[in-house]
Image (cartoon, rainbow, N blue to C red; front, side, top):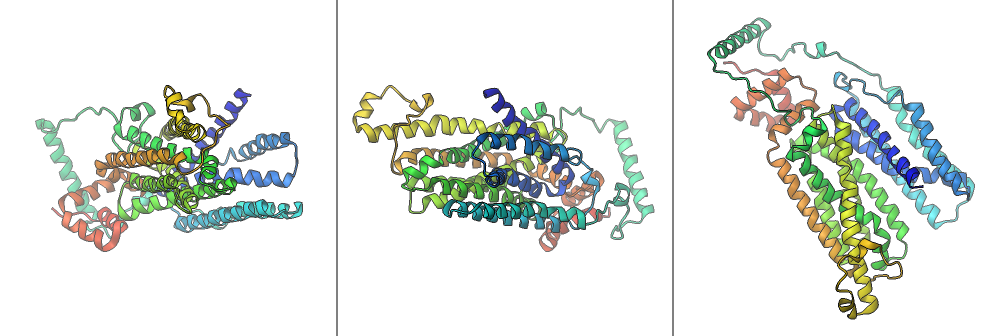
Length: 492
């Protein structure tokens, strides 16, 4: 049984990696939205399969296992030849923004629909016919995004067409060639005099393609890893212990909060990808800033759980669910920008190890141990401290199911510890962004599809004419600043 569970759970990793890597390579200009949509649907997949199983209406659990084993495998086999990189960096689709907005709308509609259906099925005794109708509507919502590739024509421009001189180029072709020849002559003369020394590169720079071994020796990679460990680990601890937290705070229906945090998790994944893209494109901040914001949101959510204020479960599940979901939309996009797309699959799957590692630390060592100690205090009174002073981490050897803890004290210390570690994660993100200007510069020109020559022009203007660059940026925004830097050359 353990071997089958191991194979089944790890099989999901292959599906996740293939879809994520292919889509990020196909849509390099929209990494945040793409990752958010994919991770959001991955979070909703459990609710979708649950609704399909409710339609089958079979009390035999073997049929559920058979459906989970055969159904996804059939879909994967049918789509395995269509999910592949198609050279997204060579494609120009003016309708991409509209298409992603449409998919976002469908995602929000689907999440709201599933939440309403789950509440109805839980509160009202529905007939089997009504459940079938709900499932049919669910399939219709899942098939709606197909209209995008059907109705929107694909427009592809070759790189040669993209490199044609534009009308806004201030230098004529003859003058430009003359200046290039002059610069080349000066470079050759300097090299001959020994003024230019070519240094051997010791590895890729930030924003270029890294292998996993090359990334493992970079501080940026480990800052992201430990930040993800602290943030996602604390969020997963809340999700794993949500039933006990609900009971300890005096709420009766724990399953309602489980459903709610699943929906908030989905909205966090979808919204995290969308807003991180806005932060990068419109405000020129590195993407880890969005991750730091998500961790601050989670820190506030842990404080609500710690003090157990009225309505704390509703506010806490909202903040923790949104913040936790945003991590899995922001981190893959940030990793692809910092370490490239060539070995993105290996880098992404290594980063996902932070999730179970964080859960082991926070849930297995901290939360369960503190909960057991507080429960035994309430059961035995003050004599507990004397009788059990030798046991420091009783939760490491399994929780005592006969003991229950009541009150906010059960998870007060755990929640405050996790809130503090979320603040530490924010500090780690600040460390990764402290020297992120060069990384941001490289990642932005990769996102916008600019060629190396145009990036040199942009750096040339930004370095020699900072006043002009700042004025253009403030007047036209970041996109207008990029456009001006690309198509304008200063005269010597």
